[in-house]
Image (cartoon, rainbow, N blue to C red; front, side, top):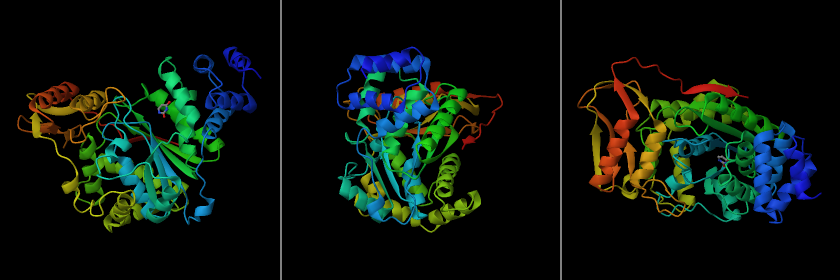
Length: 438
Ligand code: URA
């Protein structure tokens, strides 16, 4: 069938068959479908939406446009699982979750990305570990998963290549904000990992990618439904992004917090709550735990015994990082020239944080990219960020800012002061987890 005839069906509000979707995606992958045709199809989907069956056809066709990891010959004795987050600020969960669930018997072949918009990316954070190789060849990747229980890598061009072309076209044709297209884009890459089970962390709030709570719920439901139809048992958690999740936001600084968490040295309660909830869900879905309490006990024991930290150390070493990284992380993580606290002239309760602005301020410090080719400064960011609800006096530091010079320190200080609300009003706490979508 001609590509324009397939586009016409969607333009007129019809339902595409699996064969028609596959034909379109084949053309995208083989470059016989033009950018104009991709744009037209994306706009038709944007306006006319897709039924769940079509969305599943699109997701699986995009997944199958490249290599899908196969695990049968690896003889793994546990489930293959992963987590994906829609992106946040100070969201360092992946670095803790992968070794924790691996320490409990799961295998985690995590494909992660660079920072997107105001949100940080796991791949950028990992580049703060000297020597860490995020692009091992396929055989090495399998070996690492088998021996270390987990691997965190970047997306290679042979994984879901159709998504790369479609995403690039969406980006310049105002068609990013489509639940159908976001679902297929995220899941095509995740399902290419060959997973048994996936947990989605869909962020809600002023630092989230989706603009409203209802949109976050709709995305969570769409992902859960499509992934389960595609044969990957998936649950989504709607989690709060109305403040920075960890105590820090910045690459090397977040890696330090993750290692300190795994070593039991620095446990931010909100980060712990979200991380544990996601880990528990993976152990339950992966049939490694019978219920939440059982999963929680196993995970807490992996933390308390040091087993989770050992798994992280193993993963770092096998991916080319220093063998003593977990013990001597401060010898390896780069430090900024100017490190000092910022104070507010207002006193009262820290009641609100414009989390998106804090993410943008990290980019302003040099910790993220303004354009795709930018080099990032791994050393900069915010640390010891106060949680919402804290009573603030004149001498209470709001955060410690790590900057390359005084000028950028001042800009980051101004940005944080503008992003927070401190007054005598009452603080209404938000939950860490809003909803679980099964
Ligand atoms: N992340 C993705 O990978 N794809 C989207 O469409 C949106 C966020």
